[in-house]
Image (cartoon, rainbow, N blue to C red; front, top):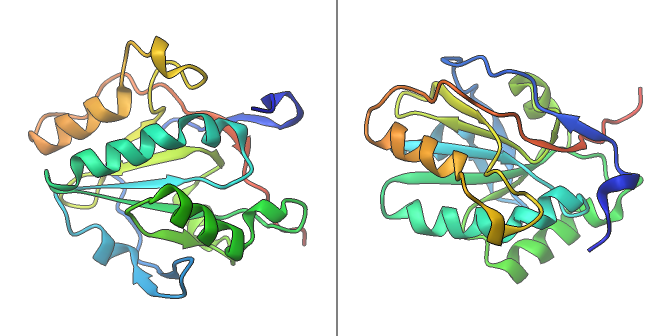
Amino acid sequence: MDGPLDMALTYNPKANLGESLPSFLIKDVFGKEHDLQSLAQGKVFCLMFICNHCPYVKAIEDRLIELAHAYREKGAQFAGVCSNDPTDHPEDTVENLKKRAEEKNYGFPYLVDESQEVAQKIGAVCTPDLFLYDKDSKLFYRGRLDDSWRNPSQVKSQDLKMAIDAALSGMAAPKEQIPSMGCSIKWKEG
């Protein structure tokens, strides 16, 4: 795996817990239109700002997919969204996003935020940037997947999984929410 040293490291800011999931119409990599509110009809909804080129996403991608598959039957809904401008990163074109979703069997919608309005409205800043909403579509958790993005065998704290379990059980949001880190979203110029 390429080292992330050539990418701009960004941490997501502190979460505005309780903020409502905005309503947006957005197409997935297959051209099907979705409303974020409709995707969030489960007991919890995890909106993951991801992309193909980011080494931080690549390092945790299989764990995110596994988590989404494991929690589907428990009522958790997941969606990935790529908000990057693919101009300088052709890996993030719709065609390549679609290919990746198929190769990896995502099992959740992979949305394309071509206008970058979804990222701006929600406040996403990096990939990965993980937002977990509760049954009322209120922000419950925004933070890292776990404590070892680079090496799955060294994970001791599965932060997102614990937050999902808490939300599904009707517990309070985790007090400690450690920011996710990754590559900055590639914003369009102008």
